[in-house]
Amino acid sequence: MTQRDVKKLIYDFPLVKDLVDLKEVVWFNPNITTADQGLFYVGLTLEDVIDAQERLTRFAPYLVKAFPETAVTKGIIESEVVDIPHMKKALEARYQTPITGQLRLKKDSHLPISGSIKARGGIYEVLTHAEKLAIKAGLLTKEDNYEILFSDKFRDFFSQYSIAVGSTGNLGMSIGIISAKLGFSVSVHMSADARQWKKDKLRSHGVNVVEYEQDYSIAVEQGRKEAQKNPHCFFIDDENSKTLFLGYGVAGLRLKQQFKEKGIRVDSEHPLFVSLPCGVGGGPGGVAFGLKLAFGDAVHCLFAEPTHSPCMLLGVHTQLHDGISVQEIGIDNMTAADGLAVGRASGFVGRAMERLIDGYYTISDQELYGLLSLLYKEENIQLEPSALAGMMGAVHISRGQEYLQRLSLDSHKMQNATHLVWATGGGMVPSDEMQKYLSQGNL
Ligand SMILES: *Cc1c(COP(=O)(O)O)cnc(C)c1O
Image 1 (tube, rainbow, N blue to C red):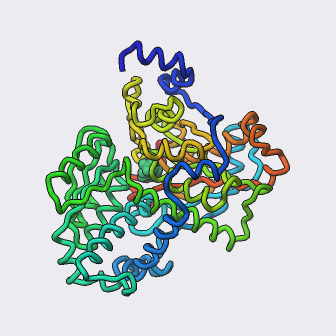
Image 2: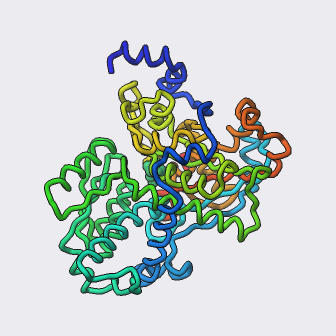
Image 3: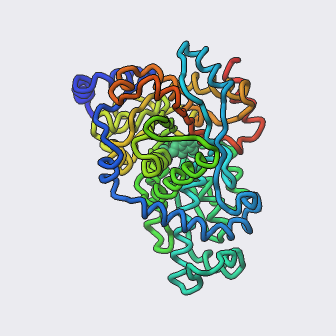
């Protein structure tokens, strides 16, 4: 993109100027549709998500054996929803904005096995691949108890095959750990943002970690190239994978059940607002897809990105999707939110989900650190910086008068609202790293 092209883009889309200036911006998309209309364009259905859910149920006995920490949930990788009323008060004071409704936190940060939202999609795609190989080889049927996969026989079988992935850290952790456990030979191509402790942890699991000095796009590209050379190597494509997307989508159906058990109502009189940190888009996109299938028009999703990596906002707002990167408009893609350090969004997710995502906003690194410290102080919950991006959602919703009016979300409905912050990572951050994060928050 030439200087002239950037000028033209800013002329057509004035909001891009604020992105270039690294301002915190909020954009409610005026072109959203009803859930029914929007879901039609995704190209995947409720049946696909149910199929994913059933596959995860088949693997549950294996996961209990291979990862005993999953025994408490019978091999189902799921996280808690908790109320965070003290944080709500603190947010209202910090941003001088009253928030109506309840503020709750979805703790994917504390998912077992890999401590982030990637324990949904990443693990699901590896299990899908393993099942396919084993069934094709005549070693497994869908009626078997999948416990049998936890054996030398299956580890030997899977060791003929390899898996590769590019990641900023957490996807590599999920895919590396589950692949190595099954017996695959696995390579994780890590971008410069990836934290040292994540690489160390993976190596301790026998994963081949390849390090790059460039960002996520390069790490993915290299992983793709390596895989192409080897017909026994399966490449997990974070930028385009529908399997990853479906693994994340299961969260929506499960949340509906979880809310039912807790007596939390969601319907046209009880709106649900969900704020999701967004990197390449697969995680938040897949979860939002599942949420729309589960709750229809009663759920409203917002995507949150760092001011230095607003790839999805840029792609959807300009309609260029994966045809533009933040670097092309002069943004450096350097952020403390390593899980969100992505310069070019998934073209698949942006196009599939744009009608179903109500809005997008950016948040500065300093604000992420401030909220990280605040959440620890108010609720004694520790997250990694990326996972705080969703914390501003309730504030932006409350300030979004034009948006609330457009969707007929009156004050009566808002009294009944649930604001759900999707906390996406942090449960496995070593304590010395966490101390560094906390000290950055200046509280
Ligand atoms: C990967 C990640 C996200 C976002 O998921 P994408 O699929 O990249 O959009 C959010 N938070 C954390 C902590 C992550 O690791």
